[in-house]
Amino acid sequence: MTDRRPGIAAFDALSDDAAYQAVLRCCSAPGFARSVVAGRPYRRVEALLDAAEELSALLPESELELALAGHPRIGERPHSTASAREQAGVAGADEAVRAALAEGNRVYEERFGHIYLVCASGKSGEELLALLAARLRNDPETERRVVRTELGKINRIRLRALLAELS
Image 1: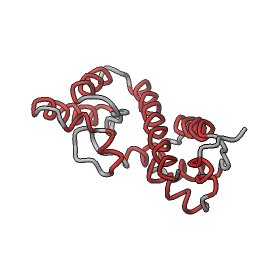
Image 2: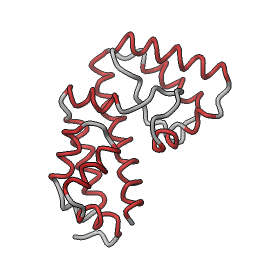
Image 3: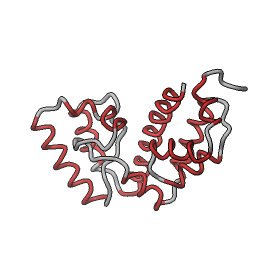
Image 4: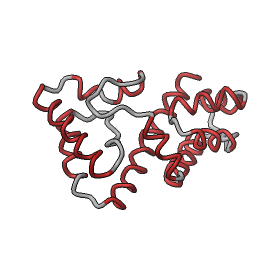
């Protein structure tokens, strides 16, 4: 079955290099981008998104670290338009929430050895702070699973945006 939406057809038709660069803007893990490109043609939006989610869950640790490096800390100035959109709820947070997020980020990184990654889309600064506090109670193994799930959510959002740009 083929999806009639033009974004997926345009993505499937991109050159390998153009598709790789586009996916790399969604997730900074090169192996992830190569694997997504190698899976083409997808023909359906959900096929692409499901494949990307599965690949996110299976990323080797070295690739996961590269993916994490492509994201700003919650509450810090975003690296990209996508990050700015995703963290829009933090922009209106008061100084106390922003300070608590900065401190929470520091504690999280000390505990887990990487940034606090969360799908921030549609969440306020207060919600992100509450999620951070809850996740600090996770053991490292549980938190690593949560990080992979959150990365999968972010990748889905960013890939949907990419397909919309290609439409």
